[in-house]
Length: 98
Image: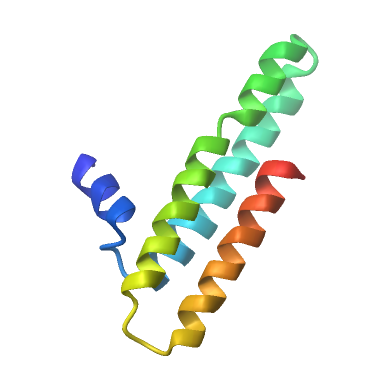
């Protein structure tokens, strides 16, 4: 597990895997779960609900860096690397701010 996290952070995971599997699918699952849990907690404790809602933020920021670094190592068409960078910035803004 630790090795996978280090590989992600260093950009050693292929761009498509880092972007789609970890950032988008993993991030979506985590953010949806946190949002659902937040709504359940709103009935009990507002502070806890906000804390749970914010739990995915470090993961999302980590994935921003991981995808960015994977894009730096990408050996395919540069347009795909640039598209991944733009998309991960937009995704991070959406899931962290909206």
